[in-house]
Image 1: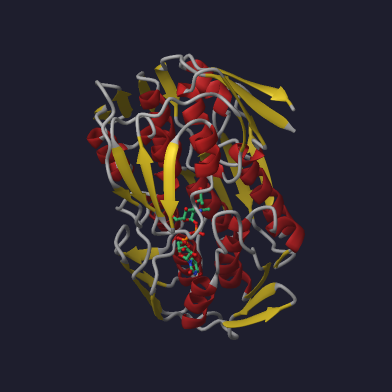
Image 2: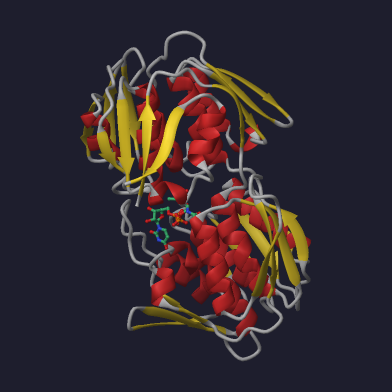
Length: 426
Ligand code: EPZ
């Protein structure tokens, strides 16, 4: 089991290459189920969850090949070919390791007329229900059975008729499953209250490249005209807006200046606006975003919300940064019920944070000191790294497999801009 050792105090400076978006890749990969032609995805991040999804696709009989990029390069190209589907079951032992596996439900149902997926279960940040995924598929004409911890979805003979579904709660995953089911339905489907995250737009762009007919892309009111079949496509995954935002916080907390090469500012408006309000100088161009400290950090009040609001996946990282702001900040987490697990660990590093339900009050500037800390969920773990970069002394972060699920070659990227960080065997 690896751990990361960080010695704080270095001012970060230089360029960090931003990888392909994990949360886009995890919904683009299952699109290969929607056609018997090859789908080639470029700029895939080198992450454990991507490997896991490749293995899951092989389980269904989808041939996959990672086309060589040099080991030192960031990102990979994966060619997926679902000529013949030999299984429509996503087994428990694969799904329990990667809850995004639930995203095969819609496309497998659309392709094969049925799909059986182990219930993903909860995780550290919440119980992560999938009721909206199932209700959307039922609205499109699927029959849903829950047996022995598995969800089985069955389409009528002749395929899904399609239908309308109004999301009572914005759900990224449920919107993705619904879109991937609707594109091959016999009729037209309309989603209202749909999620609008950039990763959803990336999914719609791939589906359109494959021949799908989708109106209202990027809005919460999407209409899909089902088509008989989809063709293969080659598509480049969007840059990871959460990885970029995370490294922006890392640069900021060290008083540094970093260029986020490849980041797309248009995907990060709410994060960049928060960073500007905290006092950072942000410069955007067609190929990336520059983030520079520019005087003392200012406290701000932040509330997470579905896109275009502030991403819940940025809350923990911004909280670490705000530990060093000169004043009191209030952060409200509206998406998940248990997303403050970084707070006890930050407190052990000297942060002054109190929580009440889904509200956290951060008093700064705190004198952060290194400590032995434990990673819990992906973004909480990154918030500990960010705090460690500005802490006095050494921090050891254990259970960093959480980090490896979402940040491609994290320590190498931070070393590129001068961080004193190394990965060692625990
Ligand atoms: C996606 O999760 C992301 N994961 C999450 O990123 C992200 O935090 C989340 O969207 C919100 O932006 C991937 O894309 C793989 P939701 P998802 O369905 O789709 C409730 C990270 O760190 N809900 O939008 O699971 C749910 O409980 C991860 O990269 C239902 O009630 O999130 C939550 O309160 C963490 N019923 C809210 O909706 C459902 O059927 C938003 O969840 C589905 C969701």
